[in-house]
Image (cartoon, rainbow, N blue to C red; front, top):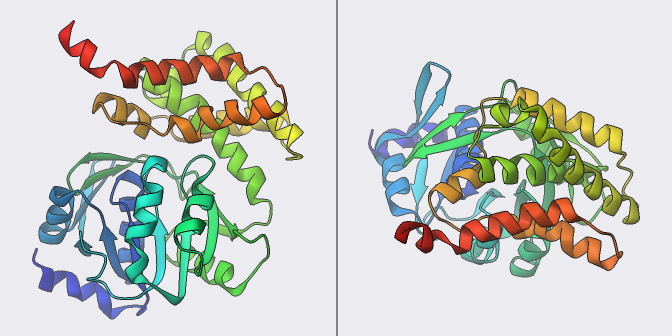
Length: 326
């Protein structure tokens, strides 16, 4: 498939959407936008990935089915021109640079949306793009990056995606983005309780991402081990304690229930942190369990379970070379 073929996707809504980060989740959203006939671009610094999407489309696997979805792909943020919507979906440690890189595509009316994991991304984006309308949110959708231009959608259903203004007030941009997501097959709502949902998702990531990365197991394989749940629940309860001190209305029962529901629906999922460990890359641990530890210290809350998970991931990150020489 050539670039000329990808231009067919521009005939639909007329909205130009740039997804920053063609990894597992960024690619999944880009695929949904492209299938909704938006003019869809993905921007990434990984040249091999961009070239594959450019030449062959983005390949999306779901179960036994596989589909090639044409879209634009680039390593140059000047190429797309001004976007109507920019979706940032890179890892936390790439956020500052990615937000700075995408500035050429951000005009006075561009809406910027982040659905990234963890705590701290909104602050970094706001610092880099202070003039944009900035929305934040979370999604329970999951995906795995299998190779350049190839992902596997691994969540059963349309998921749950919530969006709210980073300024804390509803606006037309929230409504428009939610409409766009729903038209793209993503079940989305405008939700002023976004901070609560972000902390619910934080629990999922702090438990399932870290423990799957440490154990090498899928979400389902980890969740099926009864002996894993005291550790999972320990991490959860500590995060609830920190959230309570921050006046976030998160209860232990609600958090545990939400976590178990996600573990069931994402049973086959291998979290991206496990992929990072296998690829010997830096993980997002600092905006997950690391962020919980730093918040807990401000309230003098002991969080030994989170310190264990954080310490194990940092140990794995810092000993890649040593394991090669063993």
